[in-house]
Length: 88
Length: 412
Image 1 (cartoon, chains in turn yellow, blue):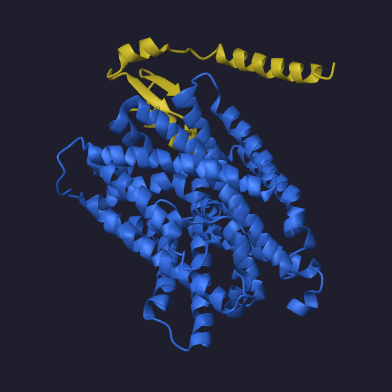
Image 2 (image 1 turned 30 degrees about the horizontal axis):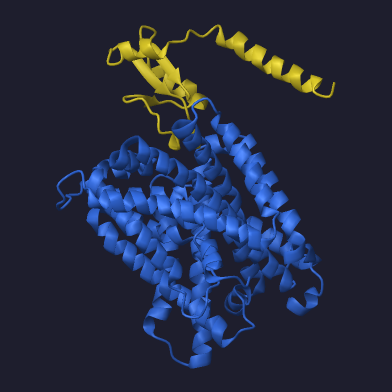
């Protein structure tokens, strides 16, 4: 019984994450690979601080776009462009 | 801390094999080219002279510890402030940064499905538990951390030096790289943070700098032989780039172990440094008695674990601010070390009436390097403000501790 609040909390966060995630279209690794180099695709690395510094996996040509500064960098792109945001 | 020399030596080497040091050596090699090798030797020589001052001052006056040496030259309040500022912020900020870096290494090198943040917290729990062990056992574990990390760097460095991937020649540095050369040279001093924890036998003050040379000369040589300097200078993880170039995926795995073991060694080394400095403060009646050696085995590691956990959980690791804070904390250690060594030189001057000129110059170079790095870093204009804030906070802690410490009338 003691674990019930913990489980409920987990379900709540997992559920809300899925709810929001369903509104954002995702792109598979293979699809992204096939579109790399296209003029209309912009890859944005939204990681900041150590999350970006310590990671070995950085997509070549990706532009750094910190998630908390979306209002600044979003002006640089048009609606015709496909923005691919990645964080891991 | 009376222990065999090897165990004692591993405490002074804790920070030396951390991922931060690997970044500094990689970036410096990129900016300086082959010049990085003699500059590393010069840096090691400077630190040796500074170590010698401190060591000799304590030999001539055995009742002196680092705190009393500092207190004689800058006053007890300032000495307590500088001591706290040099170790507490460094430990908590470095722990946060290193554990997260270890988490990424584990996730990206060994197990993709294991969350990096989960590993960082797991490691924090494990390392905090280890800190509760008796000192001798802790030193033995530290010996394992340091040996594994050092061995990994040596294997990659020696192998990479013997099998250069490209024709070795004079590297022509780009103007933008050369402009960063003075800062990169000064940064090499930060390799030795916490090395003053080493309490070796007589005339062994060169031990930690010598180990640094033995490990990092081949490593930097291999780095320059395998990777373009521009790439080394720009990379945030030059150690991984070099390892992959030297030994492919095996190199990455060796470096993954180095990063994790090096982080553990740095955490333990800095934690012990902090415990020792706070214990000194307590013995000098400049801090509450519970911070003395016997009382802090449980309390201090617990407080450090909680503080680090809070920093990680609140997302400090994902904030650019962490880099500024960590660099400032490292610079405060450099200031502490330079001032301490100069104080030791002054104490020796009183005893001996004369000292060789390098004994005065070396600590002053360290202090000058501190000011240069505080005001010259083009990426972090906030460093002077952070340094002042950390010194003020440490000053407040020192003042409160002086007020509540017993027999304070004797010490004020």
